[in-house]
Amino acid sequence: MTERLPGGNMNAVERDGGTVTRNAGPWTPTVHRYLRYLLRAGVDWIPQPLGIEGTRERLSFVGGGVPLYPLPGWVWEEPVLVAGARKLRRLHDASIGFGLDGAVWQSPAKVPAEVICHNDFAPHNLAFDDGMLVGAIDFDMCSPGPRLWDLAYFATRAVPLTQEPTPGAPGMDRARGRVQVILDAYGSDATWDDVLRVAVIRLWDLADLSRVKAVELGKPELNDDAGMYGRDAKFLARLRLEEG
Image (cartoon, rainbow, N blue to C red; front, side, top):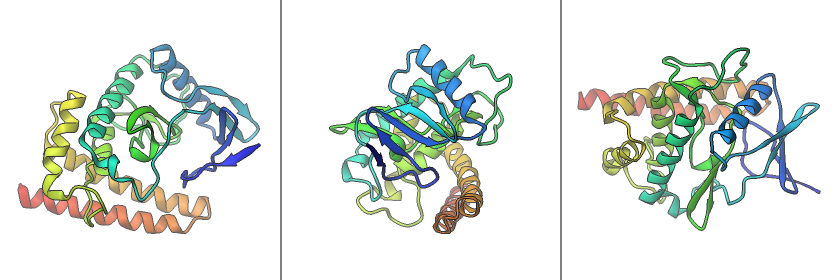
């Protein structure tokens, strides 16, 4: 018996016992090849690709719970920042050497193509067990790009870096320190300004994608998301100017 899983605003995800099915696309064979590559590299806390069935892909179900919006209060605790940054570093390092010949990506590749980016590494795509981070899901948007592309986006969602206060989350007065926690846990020499600069670009990119998907998927509510991403991008850009 299948069960529609909550979340997944850009894909229809259903659980079928110990597996999940999702809408597939031209990029799916590449993503499956990449997931198998990660598994061989020792990253065993991600979905295992099980095949493509018509217009649907089948993957193993990653145990644990994925937090939904509004995010629960424990998501904002500092250990989540540390654990997330360390998992992201493991993903990035494990992606080195993946063969790009014949690869097809849903999300455009970025420069410099240092690693394979998850492109949506955020609490809503992480699995937790009793508050402990145990896995990551939703790799269908992955593509080559710079490490900072993923780091900056993780910061926007997990710090968070937003114009409007997020209920239950730390405010922007603590943002610089929380970003540094992420950078230190990852082992990055990037700066606060580096994160803000890339976060602005990343948010505009996400706004554009949301508008496209609103038409493609017939989900006009994604236009509201696009507006929010644009407002946050402008807010962070102003913040950079004020601090510069």
